[in-house]
Image 1 (tube, rainbow, N blue to C red):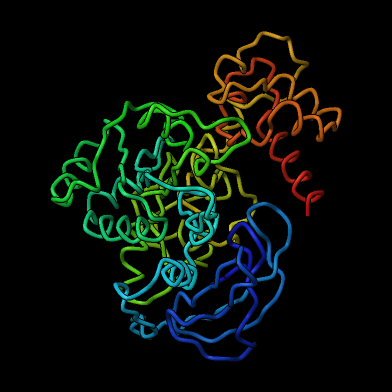
Image 2: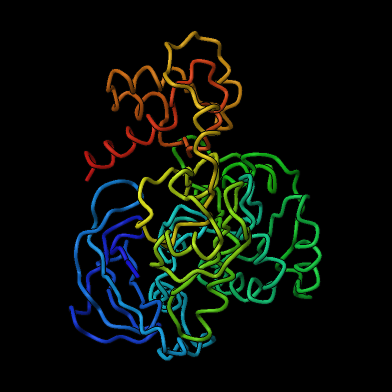
Length: 410
């Protein structure tokens, strides 16, 4: 098992263990480094082999804890720190959430406790639970809503307490009616948690899009949902919190959709955090994996990986396997100059000008992208890249620009 110390937005965790030390499943093995950070827990019984640099999905080498698993172990979770949740204040509840190591499981990996720590000047009236899962192929949130609606109610109530919200709205797309029915049977009688079915379309799951659909409220450019009195949480995140907080346990596994034309046994699997991609693909049946293209996440917002030694981390919601030759046939061999067709402007759900942003990115005018063209409002849905007839990798350029701006700000 390979456990990167940076599986979240913010400062990497700090190791609590050393090489040669035995650990049990669920035990904290790295602590949070400050507020914008989360701890890491052992996903299995075993011994720490090393703390060293390993490849990451994004390319750079990152510091990781390498754990050799005791395969004969029952792998029961033997570490826990139960709390009386009813007796906790909102501040103590947020600390308990940080102790679970929970981050946004939809892929953003923003620490959950930080998202629920709303400044005093912002009054939150509504928690929105994002159950849309609009990316093609991905079904892990759908499966969780069907099978764990009670945990969803528990997690939603705890999140409401933490932010002081009076109500919660669960938004689910209308192509998941079995999940809608499962949730509806568990809704509390007091009416504080409600369910709304929204049209199926991409990118309905983006938090600003969902706020507009459910509340008919627009979040101003450059602002966050909390500026309009709303906090948005992914449904999978709240289901996991509903399981982990009452038990006093940490995040050690997550549901991952493993699918695509190159998979023999597609499905939604509970995968321990830190499992190498190679192991997951062998389990799901991916023959001749060297001839395949592998994408972490969905096909629109996910990223291709070059190494099968990259582990499953907290932000991996899906592993898609496609035939490499098919990818090469459909992908353009090169990009061409922008022809000013305006298609990217038409499809941008945030009303941005991807064409201008792309031209500024090509000239490395990153400050102008952020200050004058609202690069920060782009949530990298990939629609602009998908429709561009010149095959310009717009969203990839925007990711690079955001990374450089973050480094400059730091």
